[in-house]
Length: 313
Length: 326
Image (tube, rainbow over all chains, first blue to last red):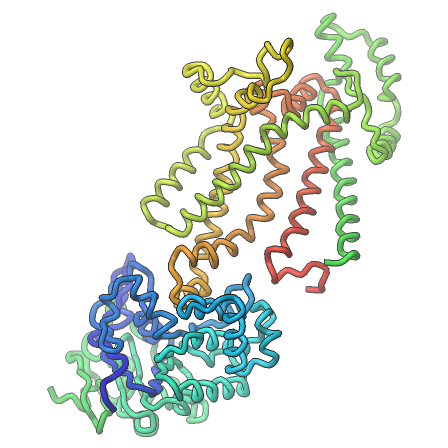
């Protein structure tokens, strides 16, 4: 693998609140290579979505962001807003979570898909409409020409998800960020969406944000596990998910229904005043590390974990 | 939208009309004082009982209340709304004449207030928390907090009396008796009443539009639009405005009907010879037939506005399909 398509360095994202700064992402380092799918997993509130949104600078204006996000060598965080707009939708596409509310209810699905193509590729009227139908066909919407003229409320959950994917792919971006695209779908539809991502991946890299470990296992080349705003483990998907190094990853896998459904005791810590030392220590059964904050340590080739079991200082 | 729906809708409207008419009939008869007693007392300082009795007999006011009610209801539908006691002409003729003058100030005031309220409210809601938003919001709260009759008086005193920019009241100069009515002269007289009505109405539209826009600005599809690379102005104009306007459709149509009531004291203060001033006059002397007529017109306007809102809504919101189950 050569130079990374996307490189995140020391990314800190904080939301100012009356109670203090919520550190939703704390010193995150990440690479995404060409044509790979990186699965970003972790429980709700661990900072996965924030990381995805920070890459496209779609967070509220008062968010405090530090660090670097390099896309093809350019630092996205220092781009002027009008340059950033040319990256959004054209270079990097995004499928937001909540497909039910992410489509505008008063415009037809076809119009909304055609919009990005009109904006970035200068397609006019019938060309843009034609492109929208093509895209809907590509994401396996039946009767795409008819469905393009329908409003979002006529679409089922799975179809809305497909429409959002079609919208994100409108200008053939090199990177697709998908935020929990399998959320709330039945098993069959979920399977179809996963297959669709595998197909989409042929021409581009995908950052696949999910708390569905099964989906990540099926799709991802590599997996990154987030906990309380930090990456606690990252490595090849097969290795991380079959032989996890971090106690949190082990706990996450043990909580799956097919592996005994044993939840991790306790709950996620405050992101305003995280626990001292290892952030996972209050819930960790293996080791009690309140004094030292572990760094990411290589535990195998390309496999890193943030745990005192491995960090010998 | 289908025929069955429209017929159903008209049927419920007729029912609503009957109920309003009944309530109106009862309320007006609960009011103390009657026309003939008040009239005689102003002239002779006392009302001879036999004169009052004779008057009541002529107008059928001595008949049982239930009979009066049935007669009234039938006549209301037949279009026989009776004669005004003060003007001695059919109620509908008086109302028709005055309604035109009310529309002269009401239509421009409502149109301007709606446009301004929506425009400023949309901007304010989109730029929530900015200095402009806070300044606009406080300005609107200030206007809203002023008692409306006092505001009307202040406008009259400042612009007409001290600054002498506009006439003090009425709708034409006395010269009109000789030269006839000059539209420019009427417009000059209409400026202050329109301004006052505008200020009453604009704050409500502004508040509703601002909060509607606040909600819309936080919707997921706005983030979707941003993620496509659209600029803020396009997102506001195309994706936010249309959605934020949806709750306004109902509000605007009802506001149009409600403004008639709002015009009562504006017309009274500015001596504008419209429906509002007519209501005030009719109320002061207990001209029941005229009052009933005015209230019937108000009821019809509100019902018509409601039907209009129901018919317009499906045209702007594709999710609403009138007549379907669901």
